Image (tube, rainbow, N blue to C red; front, side, top):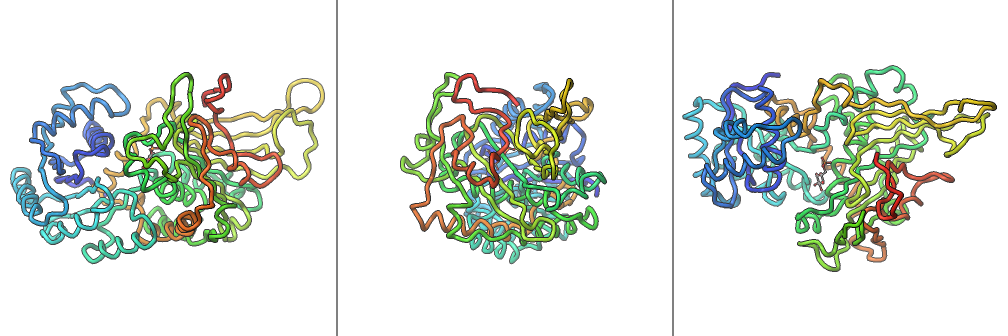
Length: 508
Ligand code: BG6
């Protein structure tokens, strides 16, 4: 797949956070790596009125502030900003699309006259359908003079019905091949590395099943709170914001069967099969299988942290979850009976995303264990930060007798000193340009994920007796989540301790 020679990249919601923090820095980084089309123009649109120059200056600041990796010279960012343009428009006003069309034509005429177009919707989800419809009506989805690709951000809908409806509306306008549904976790190098770890090595796959695996745990914890996104978040919550998409995609990668090839369809088919095999959580089982929590105020290392209900845009009596932990099963031959535990939360002690494969203990343990439960072997796939892999196993403690100690063997991406791990958006935007849809979600996958989440949402909406547990900021969430884990003495893996109890802190 080749990078196109010319492209106009249109961003809806260009005055927003996503554009400043992720999209423009990612495009800039691609440019420094010479991974962009020779002839490229980026047109930002939004309600806020900016001149081209004002937009360029704002984006120069974004690049300088949010770019990852090596330090950037301001003149590099200034140079890049020359390909940026801006148009003030209303997403839901069809007439404004004539203005948009005219502006695109003008840029196209100056660029090459036959550009391909990408439309990236970095807007609230409520306007994805209307933008797509207006673009199609303005003739901007027609591919006779170059490709027209539509990038849709998450959340894709807010429940199963809205997701089906959104897919239906998009398909009235566009074939599936023109739609790229972003789940930026799939763009993370280490999430893709799950496939390589599993299918490039002969030693893991024979053990990767119900015979040898006791349980699978996936954690995605963040230290930040809602960071000025209270309005969006309070109507969404952790289940919609993180679980329906990012966490389930990681489950898909961990649990899928080997695909027949690396073709997008082959990989997506396997992910779909995993999602179709989820044992549905019945409404009456939600209190036993799903724990939700909300962060409260606390003092972390001397700093006062505001509780969720006091954040801007959040209702003072909000019951929105900022933490969720779920236990569930995958009903197929590989995974039957193996519990999967997934959890995510804001205002936790550290930022970490990891997949932990807990292998079964040895059938007859002969030795004297110094500490820890009887499941010595864990494979920890560290998605972020400190990307890498950790294998835990028992070794003999030097000295008399046969005392054992659990030790680590690890690999860190940072040790590959000449390799910079690209940001998820760099990878995904590049893939859209070359037309590779492997790392994007498909219509049926998104709907099947919602199908699994829906009974949980319904149970919470219909039964106010289901508790929302408060947890102090800087802790690992409600202790009730430990009760989900089956087995004596077993808990979640805690990569660092709680921060609120002084002295207990330890970094990853
Ligand atoms: C986003 C969520 O999709 O992912 C945010 O909307 C969350 O609430 C973010 O903070 C986490 O992504 P990352 O890449 O920082 O782990």
